[in-house]
Image (cartoon, rainbow, N blue to C red; front, side, top):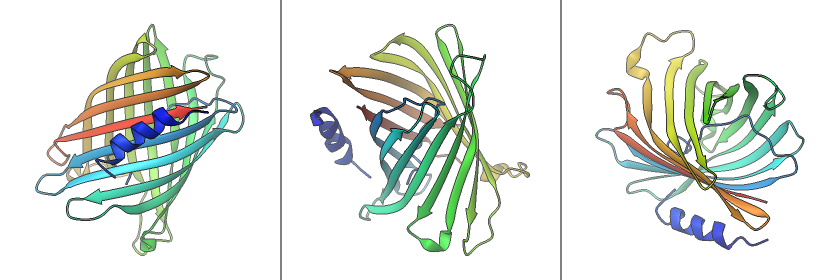
Length: 242
């Protein structure tokens, strides 16, 4: 197994970097049984009147069955004037609820348990459905996700976020589309728009064969859609499959 392409990519991105906010990804209800994935996600953003923030996630995933993929993640963060620090560790699971291609919509379930390094934040659980469909050569994804803190020093309410993606299938090595992310706030009280964040922008995707293995990538430049969202966010994901 040759890891040279992946290591080169890691070095290139990590030299610029390192919380999973800007490094978020759009989850898809896909599982490859028996496949191992090494993944790097990187993101950078700047809130109004604040220092630029860099985030990175290093992860290893495995397709345990034809319907279940599990992943371990380490999340890092760096802000201007501060060193890189480990922000959290997480255990992520994707379970397919439908047979791929059997119905008009493929549906999966995401369950992630995260342990922040600042233990007063307690444990964070994120869960929600992963929905995907195809219209001709266009793949559509939409994921409403719920998040709640447990055993934290402050009271926690269930928060609602969402992510969506449009991908136009062109060629395996290069595809294009759009991505969007948002944080709505408390799932049963959406009236306070000052706490909401919404962003969207163009994205590119691709899969490069490396012998019997492959290197997948996707990247997006996201623009804030309201006054309470960062003006722009750049996110990149590299995934080595073997």
